[in-house]
Image 1: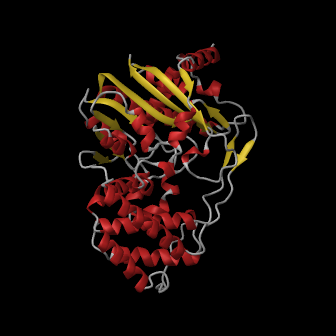
Image 2 (image 1 turned 180 degrees about the vertical axis):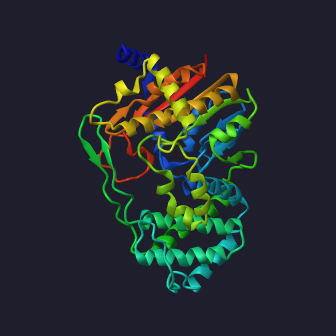
Image 3 (image 1 turned 90 degrees about the vertical axis):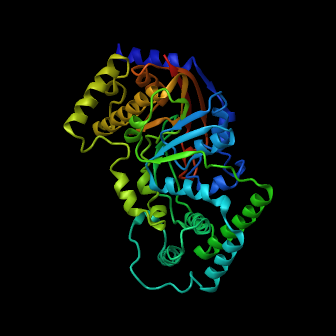
Length: 428
């Protein structure tokens, strides 16, 4: 009976679902963004400014993004004459959005002089001996680590200004190009079997050459932006630092016309770990450690009250057709993995409860989110969230899905996965 309830839910959601490969083209258009500066702050593929503009086409001025990342929804809102509020926990994302907001006031002549200073001082050559970071997730060789320490120290000595943050952005791009690996990972294929990512091979012979190329390219783009007045005015957009569950209850009810967000995916992707290098280079490692405890819970170390809440939620979902024990069983899923996924759904359920409160009666909530990887099983996230949303009077209005069929991708970016859902709800 429970299995039949899940199958009925799948049928109901699929009846509202369309396959839209056009959304895939919008999602992966990293090199075709409407403004090149967006590529300087994006963390990955999967939710582009162009896609956000498409999804914000409905009337209404006020927009909310509870998982704002580096500000994709805020940027799209600015371009469409809307006013958005974003909430983001990761310190790196907040810093990058503020960098982007400051860049229109950049002095290009000063930036060029600072670039000359870096070359004349031989920052990459005159490395001061000292203790190097030992975090293996950085994925850098010893020479690159030493050069990164030297550049980090030099940039830290500069006063805070847009030109400094641009040099930091360029260096982060260079560091990514020099990383030895993006980490080995294994993913189940939709048709069975296992797909493994390959290690990334650096594109440049040295960190200095990577930095020089990215700096030259960025300077050309900056000149073009200034001549074409291509900067977007982000001053009316609000980015709030903190976790969605802490900030959402402080917002007024019936305030927003639309919610557009791309929540963290349940795919084994450790956001703090993956971006530890970037946080370290910007001097945000302590802020990251503070924020780490507030990222999506995984089922371990929960308080007694939280476990009771989780137990009540899973029992209720089972009655509505989503028995996680029944769905996620056998050798493919360990009990702790099932518990982690249940905790993830509970977190999103609590967020959706607050979103239902903050949107206007005729408002809309849209998630761009990948299917969940629980152990070696793939769970269609649109079906799971449709059941979760019902308890908060949220009715699925439309679902669009698209897939990336490259099973051998070496990218660690978001669209390495096969299936993404764009789910929209309205108040029931």
